[in-house]
Length: 54
Image (tube, rainbow, N blue to C red; front, top):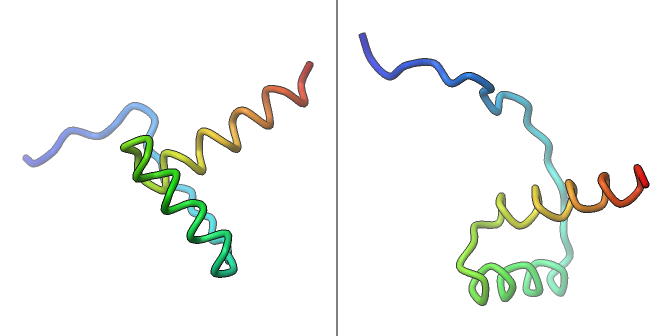
């Protein structure tokens, strides 16, 4: 019973530390784009990884 298992669960965790200015920039971006911090960080990491593969 219960919730079905996800096909590709996000079970890996990373932690980052930001200074006050970086945190404020991230908060502002999340509010302006109606996204969560997790969504913004994942998007930025994936964009960087894809760009470096070229």
